[in-house]
Amino acid sequence: MQAAAPAPYVRTRLSVMMFLQYATWGAWLPILWSYLSNHLKFSGTQIGYCFSAGAIGAIFGPFLAGQLADRSFATQKILGVSHLIGAAIILAMGLTGEFKYFVALAALYGLVYAPTMALTNSLAFAHLPNRDSDFGPVRLWGTIGWIAVGIAVGQVLFRFHTPEGGTEAEIVAAQSAGRAVAFQISAGVGLLMGLYCFTLPNTPPTKSATQNTAWAEALGEIVKQPLVTLFLIAVPVSMIHQFYFVHADGFISSVQSATKSQSSFDNMTKQVFGVGGGLMTLGQMMEIVVLAMMPFLVKVLSRKQLLLAGLVAYAARMALWAFAPALSTATGISELPLVMLGIALHGFCFGCFIFVAFMVVDEYTTHDIRATAQNLFNLVIVGIGTIVGSIFATSVVETWAKSSGTMDYTKLFSVPMYMAIGCFVLMLLFYPSKKKAA
Image (tube, rainbow, N blue to C red; front, side, top):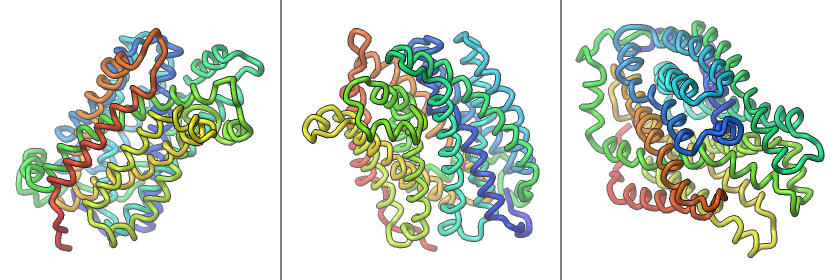
């Protein structure tokens, strides 16, 4: 793709784009596991397939959306059509209760939504004057969108779907059923995003492409260092990420809904964030801080150092959650502050690894395959890694960590903790340390 003449108010317009893009996703993804498990009563294997189905679009993204954006149609038009279709599909997902229909709709939604994450990146890179200093402040508005909609959903659950004086089981059942509202909110935001996309700066395909097939040209570039190491390590990192998105809502809700030892801090947290997914917005709040600091961080730290910092955060987050009960006993504080600290580390996980990785992909690929290259990396982290990670986190590790129907979160979260440590070692050994010339 190529950029047209500099567009007026480009940073503001791209910031609104990012806000709507991630508010659409953030409305329902954090609550999906609890909704499917506790309300629709899907099995762990079925839930794994639902999460995996949504990643199908990332698999086909480079060969469909990326190819179209780099060679055939303006990126903003592809985004608009994709989000309008996606709004209808996500609304239908909240209305169905049968596994076969839900998983089919999830696959269709992934096909139209997943590629848009990479396309919004490539559109932003095409129009921002300076990638290193401008992309962070623009992308953080996507995080703000995720936070805003997450708190909205959490407040709806707390205010309207939490029976007063109910038992723990009654509260969980009511909140789980109420999570259907997240799909309605997402559909509304998606409709707004679809219409807004047609007002974005014009981003036509590149006229001077060296090959007609954009994905073939992109593959030839990503097999070189440092992209080949980055792409390979991104697969297990995405699997680690899935443990967070699949199990976080259920884990947090179990801590919050416990009827024993509710401190004033615990109750205040519910009043502010609601329950479940609302509290997870702490991670996005820290993400804003990290992204806002990125123009400074990229000047003082190398790409490799930033990526390694992200992997440390992945390992520390899973360690805090795995050993929260033991740490609570040792320190005398409740588990909730420890859980919240783990959530806050999400900002460093995303900001220092995934965000920086997208910058590296743009840095080491040519502009005529910009959309396809971003979609290829999306294929790895949202496609392959998500499919394998979802099944691994549910059918394999969840089954192993669950005993007599009770989840052993120490066993569950220790697996991604050790995976993150392994990724850190591989990145340290194989990712080149030399900086790319400006």
